[in-house]
Amino acid sequence: MIYLHKDSIYENQTIGSWAIPIFKYLRKKGKQVKLIDAHDLEVVNNLKPNEDDLFFGRFGHDAADKKMSKKTLPIVWKKFKNTFPSAESYYHYDDKLKQYNFMTENNIPCLETFYVKSKKDIDIEFPIVMKKTWGAGSEQVNYFETIDDVIDNKKNRGWTLQSIYPSLIQRYQDVDFDYRVLLYNSGFIIYKRLNEWKTKNKDNFPYGTEWRDRKDVLEKRKSLIHGPSLADAFDDLNDDLMTLIKKLKDIQINKLNSYYMSWDIIKTNDGYKVLEFSAISTMFNPFSKFYSFSDNTIIKENTRSVLAPIHRYKEFDGIKKLIDEYIK
Ligand SMILES: Nc1ncnc2c1ncn2[C@@H]1O[C@H](COP(=O)(O)OP(=O)(O)O)[C@@H](O)[C@H]1O
Ligand SMILES: [Mg+2]
Image 1: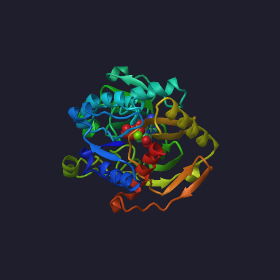
Image 2: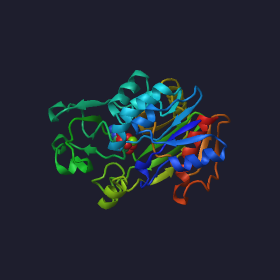
Image 3: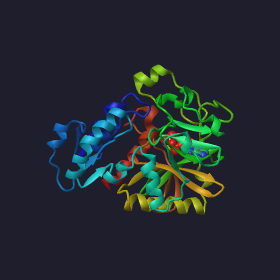
Image 4: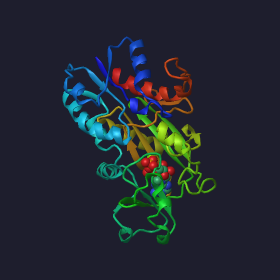
């Protein structure tokens, strides 16, 4: 039996709920599947899974989601042998400080990062990037050219409306794009997100896109900014990048107990550096391509599926790959 969490919190989001298309997909494959509310303590407490039952769910960074997940997921991890997300990957979820510690412990190339509680703690060379330990979609990621620009005001607090302290700081790396790698056990999707803040909306570091209508954000729980421009990155694959990706794959399976993680990477003057990683991410496959580890080739895919609404089929492509890793 596969127990599938109803992630109804995300129903109205761009990404949408995962549960319904996944449910249909598993049924079509002839799998036994049960939709449950894994945020309901009573439901979770009453689960009596078998050894080989799988628990599967999307637990995102929405505040209400995190609050309930903290209570119920530990019970799930005790009862099930196989879960997505794993306890190890969720432990690092939405916490860039924990991720930084993990990366340094596991020799993953990353940027030197400092935790600062106030302005006087800032003691690195400018320009810098300052970011909250939590949040997604650059909710509070600021670029500061000089120490005088570091002001805890409304503008820098951004959408979070919270003080810029405490935060993490890093030296700014002059890049025009970052890589998003959706890394599965069997292969990966890679694309670039263009960092267009220098030429477009300068107040929105790093993507430079416009703010979304406040109503959509509040009522539909949409992300705060319009998404970045994307570009194909499969042509950028070289030995260094491939070596890093394969290393990350070994680490995610052996240390994070997960068949899937997404990784944010930039190319600096000092080589590739990982910015963050996450078990839960958008799973969009914008260019419908997949690098397969088994035959070391890029597969061009025709993935249009009747199981997902038309505007979400590229997202469903990534989600389907995730499911396939767990039901193989
Ligand atoms: N030190 C840095 N130098 C240059 N760009 C950065 C730096 N840190 C973050 N960025 C840019 O901001 C993006 C978002 O940062 P990230 O740490 O991944 O936070 P999040 O995705 O949670 O907002 C990165 O993908 C990268 O484009
Ligand atoms: Mg990121």
